[in-house]
Length: 521
Image (cartoon, rainbow, N blue to C red):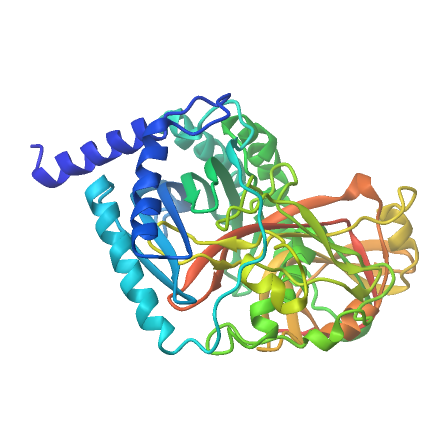
């Protein structure tokens, strides 16, 4: 039976789909979107706002998982699928009145509601102005009228659910072929963001952002020894269409997962002490995220995030100072193909670009928004403003952050050959880092011993500890561009109320000298 709730949801979804129906090759947003945006700009002008922008956003998320497991007592193999899908549609309006921000949002996208919500945003701004220490100033920005779409061939939401589940079933079946493997898991997730932005500075921008990510894992159990181990495979998460799914190689890596989890089950524990580390891109991406990308967010450095996300040891007096070795050049970038943080424009209407954060170990630039740029003497924003939905306020969020690759002739084998006593670390594990991003500890998913310049067998229970500046000063080499890979994180939390961001970090295998390696439980 079709309930009123289902009818309204279906009607809203149809309206949203029609509203964002611009073809992929269009260079201007649909007139219907521009007319809706103009309502907010007209109302804001009536209230004497010095700035206004509106974002009309449609979000869709689809999560598909499958678990194959031996049933205890019978040995029978059972498969359990799990499917979830969400969609939201609405708009948010920002204004500056009397030098202060105001924001309001609604899920009802009509001209009348947009006019009313703009008035609500003005009321909020006037209230904020009474406690604003000094007026908000925005760095300059060009006006754009454009459409930007994640390069793709096929929308993943048009692919049948059966095809997606069949893929995961094949992956899990391959993982489960050895009886020592207790369970196999696989999942694949899709997200699309249709977004329209219009501002009182004459910008009108439509974007369609598509993201795909997934993983597979195997868990092995030795009941006699009372031990278990899990091995994970997480392919590069990407902004792309369904055509990217075969490139994720989930099926091709299922056999390797099965073999490595059994080896991991019986791997000897590491002998702790000072060791050299060779960190793979799917591991180092998280260390980059936590110890480089987060502490170079300007709002952290200025103390704006102290209540929740902490501050940063990279304070403004560090600009122009050495904080890493000469092998470390980090780039902030929202233009790289397939990066999770890649888009055409940020939520300030700033065209995205790349910029240097650390240049051969010297700190150069923070991540900034239009409001922040002038606080460090910049004339323009680095395009790092983003909200995670129509209902949330845009603020400074992390771009993709890359560690540049080493010389093209440097191979991973060269880096291993230079290690007498060390550990190769692959994949993400548990970690902790303090509120200033100064002291940290990282584990991984799998570990191999390196002895006498050669990679040996698997070891276990590995973690490493360091102070951030000491760690990056200990970097003495990174493999060439042929080894460079990007990996993403899809749950980067920040702000109150909390907002979630998805970004990518890229690097080649990288070597660090004389790091404290500890034995974990």
